[in-house]
Length: 464
Image (cartoon, rainbow, N blue to C red; front, side, top):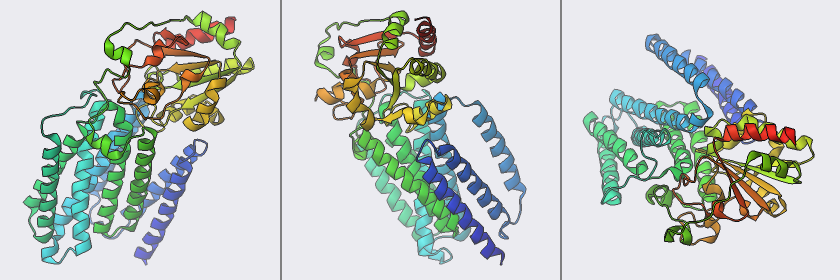
């Protein structure tokens, strides 16, 4: 009776997960989706704790207190700029947990040779242990790159791809060996090699590809968790893992499409930092002109504009400038200016980063335009404000076949009548590619901290 009740409660939790994921797909319902998914997780945890297979609650309570305390502190203190690396870290911990559970299950029941662990369970344990370990190590490297503990540029070495392939073959062979014979050390060797492979695969990936990498590793963690569910015979863990795996896979495809790059080129291309090219003039070393503008002149230009588009990027997040930019949009809107925000799919350091940042500042959802909606309107736009964005507005991606960015869809801000770029300096973006938009005759540069510049701009608009 209790077992049937637990399965029924698991079904309710699974419905909450599905509804939460559905609502998370829209900014309007994302908050509700997060809340419903959290309720589903709470229901699942309670149902699991009343399962009669739990013998001792001591370690469970201790782990819950420690983990809950750390999670509460992180949730209250983490800055929006640090959210991408937090997502990478939490994703890695999920993969590591799945791997440790798989190893524990293998140790407790033996493998196929002892017949106490069936064929499906044995395969599930091996998959979870290997993929979970790869996701754990790879996510930690992604965290290090985003946190700037590790260099954001690709880190490569001679024979890198061949060595990685050999390690992958060795892992597969050891996993088969461990599944056919009860031998804990063999599985541990496979896990160690998987950790090495996860590290070696992500190190050569540059910062520009981190949104794709985070989505891909998230999918790997979900699949590892689902495999753990098969090993444990836990239906809810299978459902939750498959939801994460499927959504992560779809998100990876969307991010790759947004960058016009295949997943293979992301994982094995060593692109995303250190290349200062991106234009024939830049490559030849010619000094290119840069035109600047002050906040007073920009304020006058904005007040008399008909249509203004704001393009946010990671620099806006770093400066914590989402609130003054919303105040600027409100002021211009009150004067009859049509103000919208154009969001590139890979703006920031993770998918949806800019949407969440602007939602925090209460920017109306109907003012947030996706790339496909925004691009046709740029030719009819009077002024575009590019705040902290770089690679996603680089015209070399469209016009220069020699650029590493070539083929990546961009926000075509250079088609607007005027472009103003808020930037601290002329440094290249995360991809390490110079942006010739900054030297376009219709572009003006507003150097300085974005928050301070926008605060002054708001004041100047009020004075016009």
